[in-house]
Image (cartoon, rainbow, N blue to C red; front, side, top):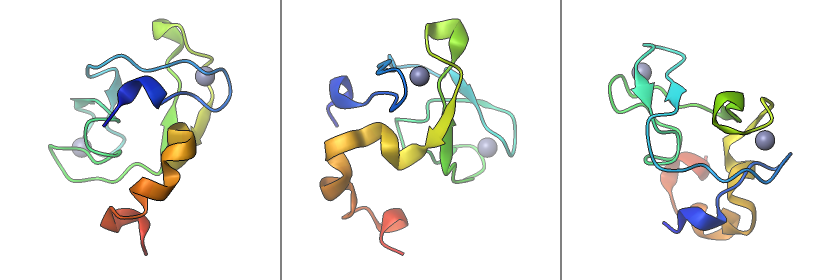
Length: 83
Ligand SMILES: [Zn+2]
Ligand SMILES: [Zn+2]
């Protein structure tokens, strides 16, 4: 996936690669954009992703899919979004 097009719908902050988030379920460090919001440790699916202020973002939470903007059509092929 082309991460340069992934951005916060509030402030347009673009997430660099890396575990900048914590899983809400198991607390492990994770990258929300490496596996479409799914934690690789426990499998928890994050429907919302916050914009990390410590990384230069705005601190607001948005629906994970909103971060992809015009990617939405391609993502509908991924099964977690087709329910
Ligand atoms: Zn987890
Ligand atoms: Zn933001």
